[in-house]
Structure formats: C-alpha cells, structure tokens
Image (cartoon, rainbow, N blue to C red; front, side, top):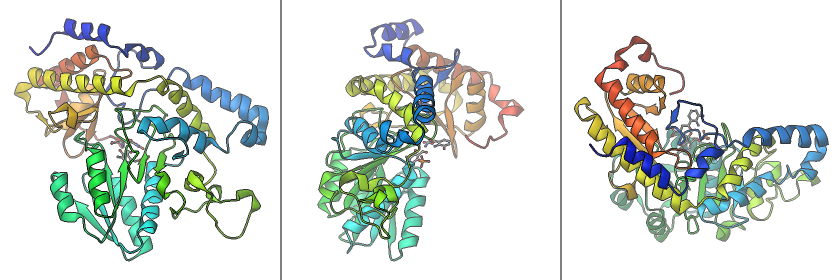
Length: 414
Ligand SMILES: Cc1ncc(COP(=O)(O)O)c(C=O)c1O
Ligand SMILES: Nc1c(O)cccc1C(=O)C[C@H](N)C(=O)O
C-alpha cells in the first residue's frame, strides 16, 4: 500500500497551512476536488456581500461611486491581486471575464506589432481562448491564426510556428485538462526573442502556485477558481508597464477614457492601466473577491505550491495503487514540477464514474471526451481527503456503481 490513512492524518497535523481550511465554508461530508473550477467561499463572504448592499448601496445610494470607492474597484482590486502573479501596483485591472480580457490583450498586442499578421494559439487551451481569438481575427480581417496542436511538445511546436510574421502568442500556463504546466520564463523569453509578444492565461495557475509575470507582455485570468472570488467573479488583466503608454485595445468603453465624465464625442485612452478598464464595474461581484483577497494577503504561495505538489503526487500514487485493475490512465505529468494543482485520469466510462463518485461525496469533474479531473486547492484540501477520495473512487470502480442508469444521463454543465 502506498500510504495508510493514519499516515495521511499525520501529514495533516504537520501541514503548515492547515489553519486556512477553517476560513472556508465546505458542506459536511463533501470532499471538494473542484476548486480548480469554482473555489469554495471564504466564511467572510456573506458578511462582505451584505455590507456592500446595506452600507454602501442602501446607505449611500449613488454616492457609493465616490464614497465607497466603487469607481476605482477595478484598479484597487487589481493592486491587491498583483502580488499573486508576481507584479506590482498599477499593472493589473480586474473586471469583465477572462474571455473579454483575452480580446483586450490580443487586440492591444496586435496594435503594438502592426507589421505582423499572425497570432499563435494552442488547441490544447480552454476553447474560449481560441474562440475569442477567432472572433477577433474575423472582425479585424487580414490575420492568420497559427494553432499549436494538442499533445505536441511546446518547444518543438514553437520552433515550427514562430517567425517574423508572428505578432503574439497566447498560451495557458497550466493545461485545463491534463494539468501540464509550462515554464513561463523560458517560453516568454523565447517568444520575445522572435519579436512577438507573450500573453499568458493564468486561469489554472493563479492561487495555485507562485506566478511571475514580471517579464510577460500581458496576462489574463479568472478569480473564481483557486482565488475563491465566487461564481462569475471578475477576471484580471496584467499589462507590462513598458507597454502601458502605447497599448490600446479594441473595447473602448467609457471607463477607459481619459476623461469619462467630460462626455467627449471621441475616445481618448486614459493614462496607465486604467485604459484597460471598459465600463461600469459589477460592484457586487467585487465584494466576495475582496473578501477572498483578505485571505490571500496572508498566504505564502511557496507553501501552497509545496502542499499542492504533495497532494497531487499522493493522489496519483493512491489511485494507481487502489484502482490498478480498473483501466484508469494518468494523463497528467508524473513529475510534480511539470504539473499544476490538478490530476486527470482517462477512462472510457469517465462520465458515469464521475457522477457515481459525486453521489458518494467526492466531487471532481468530467472533461470530454473521457477525462476524470480532480483539482486540489491547498488552502482547504487535506491529505486525509485525498486518501478518502482515492478509496471511494476504487469502490465505485470495484463495485461498478457507475453502471447505474441514472449516472448515464448528461447534465447541461459537466
Ligand atoms: C484557461 C481558461 N481560460 C478561460 C476560461 C473562461 O473564462 P470565462 O468564461 O470566465 O470568460 C476558463 C474557464 O472557464 C479557463 O479554464
Ligand atoms: N467558467 C465555468 C462556467 O461558466 C461553467 C462551468 C464551468 C466553468 C469553468 O470555469 C470550467 C473551467 N474553466 C475548466 O477548466 O473546465
């Protein structure tokens, strides 16, 4: 046996960041391995939302824009988030969704490289990234999208794809399906050496590990996964200071205007990162995110990463030990350095297996065509949870619970 449950309990006792679990609300009897899709709520979330509604909205009405700092929420929240991606104040704004942030980043990058007409995208990325690039290229006209293929070695793929025609490269630091993690410093340097600009999607890395975007040109990401900002929480965009005076994106809404309340007829971009805001911020959505950032301010990301690697390695060992006869195939890198904070196994009956597992209190998710995906948010997942999840998965497979008819029907959201 890889390790006993008692040994896992001992690991929990020695865990230097175990105290953070008490700061989150998790239903009893649930092992929540989907924090990589939607993080759990901090205990302070409910009070933060109530405060925003009662004190700021009901108490101050429209005065909230000035007095409660609503107008500047994209910038003030961006400054709080910046250290989590290794950058400084005045470099990040928070607002809209990641898909919209991709349009801002890519359109700004194309404007900075007007003589280059190729955008490199990765077919392994979460599809919305490619979809947004596709719409953008179609709207602008005259651009070619050069796709890296799923499963290709990134170094070799980039060798074939980079040229003096390439304006920008959009990649995810961590693959949403396999959890494979790229070396952002090396890839950024390589892309920039070719004269192109590097844009990172950090959806699956922000809050799961130390991230250093200080050399990247742009980065985007969501705040509802490891960062615990809540369903539909606003996304972030980082713009390197060297580009801020020149970079102009195509979503020229009035909040990004140099003088929004002058109501001028034409668009003039604001100075600095403010030009990357678009329009009225979703004020109520910033309350849970700022409650989560109160926690993140106290978190040592090196400790998060160390625990993340230990949790994911333990899960792989236990699943391979307990489930050996049942046809699961690991699709995540075995080397923890090359993984994010999630583990994927493929199985032809992946969908009903995941439904049966969720019914038994272990929540992972399924990604087409055949991937059982498990995310490990180190602030609230315990080593004993990992043990129990692997044991429950083994039981579902051994007893073939997944054959139950009700697990075959597909839900709208998987
Ligand atoms: C890597 C990645 N990029 C983008 C998104 C989509 O972001 P949104 O729907 O918030 O625009 C997701 C997840 O939904 C994702 O995993
Ligand atoms: N953003 C999501 C949504 O609107 C509905 C359901 C799931 C999501 C997710 O975030 C999924 C996630 N990006 C993934 O990696 O699959």
